[in-house]
Image 1 (cartoon, rainbow, N blue to C red):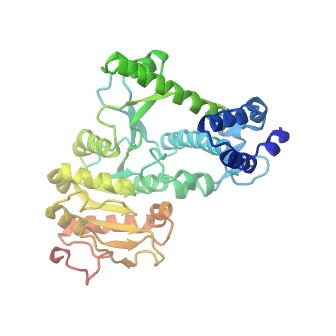
Image 2 (tube, one colour):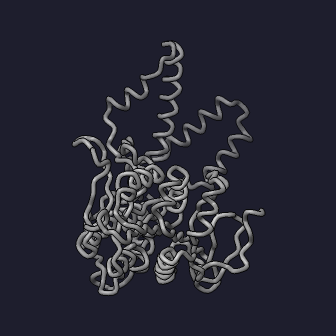
Image 3 (tube, rainbow, N blue to C red):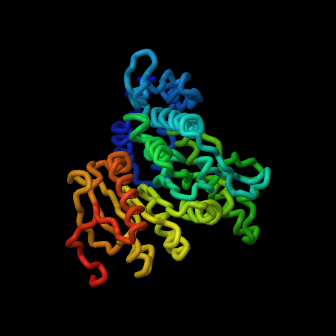
Length: 416
């Protein structure tokens, strides 16, 4: 194996190519020489060095990890934290292993939402047929019947699912910082109903059958002669690609297709759907949102689409390092004015928790989350957010707006 790598390493190939270019002026001869060079590479021998099979355990026990009493992920034998570089020089394999563990973490958090937080899983769409793709959210038993308070949690974009703020924190830090469980338990203790959104569960992946692959390639209405030329080019391209792919990615993964979930095909669609079918139907007089990162953008889109309903139902919104932009999303003046009075964004900053942070955007006050790490903003601002909600509700009942996170000398955005 090492023999081939020593002889045909990239520098050697480069040198031989340079010689070919200098000594063989004819393009056809150069191509023939290059093919001869490549033919000397024994792919089967080289592949012996390739990554192990992409086959991983489907349980925490199989990975030999568990969560300790502090909610930290630790190896059951060594007590050490998770190690990403389990095998040196196999980054792709290590990444796939990490992703496999991440899927197990997601299912583990789902179980905690049901077992520890006593939430129930509700299928979406509400009128889904047996065979169509489905998603789900989690709700407390009193989510729709609690007459007083309802807390709605929206995470950011990416691999996270319902109940999570950041998978990386769950694996490398602990459950408290990486999941929404502290929010749910605190809300339950203080008499809130709870709804946990699942805005990234937008589609299911199914393996493409040969018939589906053939159908997608034969569906063109092009003339037969043009299609034949195109097919010939595609076959040659595929042959070259497969030649290199055999070494780069010897474990070719199955070809899949995405089947989107009706009315829940994006975080924005999902948020509006849950609002229409659950939140707006709830009995709560005061609805509160915590929206992290892209979840903040999804909330602003909800506000744009359901402005009157949101204003009537929502008492306060806590953003945590939200990526919303009232200019790009074209939020109107009345929405910006409402956000200034009823929202606050805890952003990543080196300033102390709740310290004012200036912004040129005419939407809502920004204060420090007490951390410079984006993924930690929801956890670090946790106590301040519940205080903000309590004061917002008190202010609503007394018809006086809350002031703890407002700047008395705030810029008058309407003048910008």
